[in-house]
Image (cartoon, rainbow over all chains, first blue to last red; front, side, top):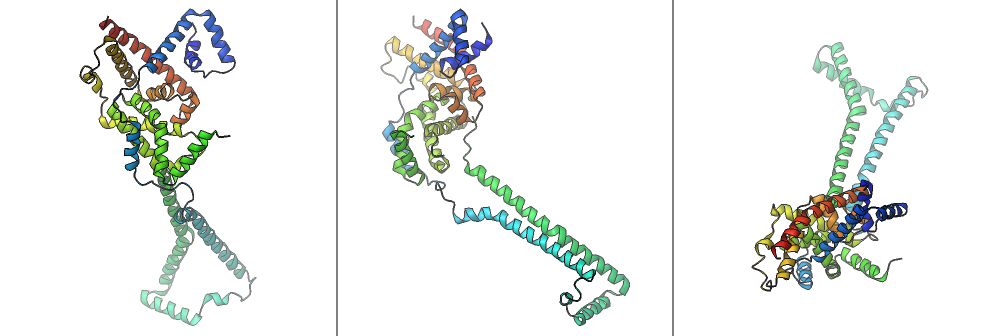
Amino acid sequence: MSDHITQWLGAYLDGELRGSRIRQVESHLSDCQKCQLELDELRGLSALLHETQPPDGFLPRERFVANLTLNLPRQNGTAKTPGPIELGWWLVPIVLIVIWIFVQLSAYISAALLTAFNLGLLGNGLSWLWGDSARQSLWFAWLINLVGEPAGSLALLNTIDLFLRDFFGHYFWQAVLGLVYLAWLMRAWQKQTTNSGNFSRA
Amino acid sequence: MPTPPAQAEAALIEKAQHGDRNAYGELVHQHHQGVINVVYRMCGDAQLAEDAAQDAFIQAWLHLSKFQPGTSLRNWLYRIAVNAALDSLRRASKTTFDEFENLFLTDPQAGPESALLQKEHRLAVQQAISSLPEASRAVLVLREYGGLSYQEIATALDIPLGTVMSRLNYARGKLKQTLTHELMDAEQAYV
């Protein structure tokens, strides 16, 4: 008796075999007494399983249905259309991406304009961006007065200014957007896990 | 093309998905016996099985909005029923066989030996099924008592087709082994 045939006997009995596999099993069965016996035992087992009915003592069907329908809780959600909150939820990543594109574009345009200005391509066209020179002088004078030694203070202020510009311009926004996006992904995953009603453990 | 009963069921499902309790009651009525069969074979105890069936139908009601129209409600219910039965068993922390204890007490018509022998067979069969590992038991119950095809079992339990076959072979082999001894002993006791 071949193990392979034994392996297929249950499926043969259940009518789950197709094509050449059936012919293979039937051909083997015609020659193999042991496998025929095995098949008969499987048939006997199936009959035994079916001849034993569940015991009495269950609630009658009508009463079971009546009790159940009376005690049904509120359903978790409706079937189809997502509400405005659901739509808003899916808009979050789109809004984040738009903000990120805006920040990046602003940085690139600023850099391009500054380069063009430094090369003298724009003439005096951007002077309005520099603000009021009299107010700027007063501001620096006040700062120098406050901190003390002018050259060292200016160097320090310059360093801090550069650091803050780099930090906010390049890292801070991207880090915040990244964190918000990660938080959204986690929440979306959690929501999906809760809603799927995980029924596939067995 | 869906058959008329399938269309009627689809209409009931749609109503129930929109909160119609009467429509859901109709669906429960149609699938009650099948679900009871499955959970009883999984639990091996009538009381646990009835609780599990109720849990299964309530879970199905709560998640009905997730049911995909066009797929089999019966298979979906059986999957929920199998898991509800396993949860019931875990809550009970052990498989109880009260019927063994009540064998001579609860049935006043158990006089004839054949009736008693039949009851003994039933309990031996149920005990053998309950002694199977959960994974194999679920596959066997869905095949033998739920009447699902291998493919439907694979879909319901989210396992490969080959695993369905191997678990079924294992379960049948184990049952043959157990029941051969138990049933021979039981028959000899009444000869």
